[in-house]
Image 1 (tube, rainbow, N blue to C red):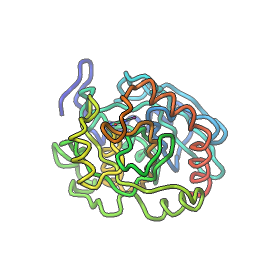
Image 2 (image 1 turned 90 degrees about the horizontal axis):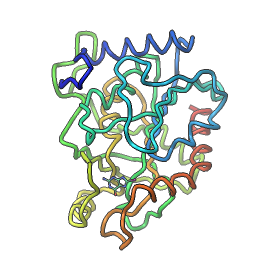
Image 3 (image 1 turned 60 degrees about the vertical axis):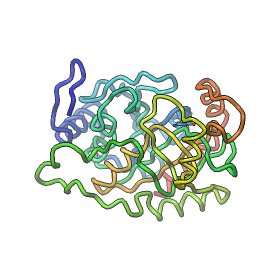
Image 4 (image 1 turned 90 degrees about the vertical axis):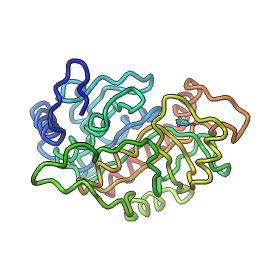
Length: 280
Ligand code: 8IG
């Protein structure tokens, strides 16, 4: 594992246990049920999911670097949604920022160490399938990890942890997908292609992704899904299509536009996530 300036290379699973202990101390909450990782433009989903029990700055917890992308918040919020105790993680870091896979999945591993049995991974994504429309959420049915990275690379997981070769069949759990579709019968399912990122794709790359079976494309989520499945968490994934990918339409891509589209879609997404959490 490559250490970032000012950070010690700590064994990642132990680091997550440390972060979960600090979370318990800071919030007084012993046990969480589900974590929600908020992607670009999903900040509205931190509001209105239930009653806020505690708020803290994620960077107060061991191992969490400071996110540097506009639209990402540094929030760790504890929310009671019906019977479900929810850990909302508003800060996410990306491979393209030169964070390591272990840093990218630290939130998910911390959530698991805090007792979570499931995680909702949200993101903003480009639409590849021309049948998709901007502003619509897509239920992730499966993924293509095209980052060339994995949270299961590096030293073998320590004793007491499952081995690295985790099963990725049904990574996005059928039970949760059925539940989401029940709450929103119009929800379309699609395959999410996770890229290393840094720039959007060229039209040729988008055509390649379409040929590989991708419906949406983004720069996050896939490593978190792997880390979650490795630790036995159920995963629900939701992409908000904030732009059509390059060459699918002739509109140019701008990050500001992505954030504006995301803001408009907020309330419907809150309702969907809130519904899933209450019936988890
Ligand atoms: I928002 O078109 C968003 N994120 N890779 N491509 C990739 N990531 C994205 C895109 C996109 N739109």
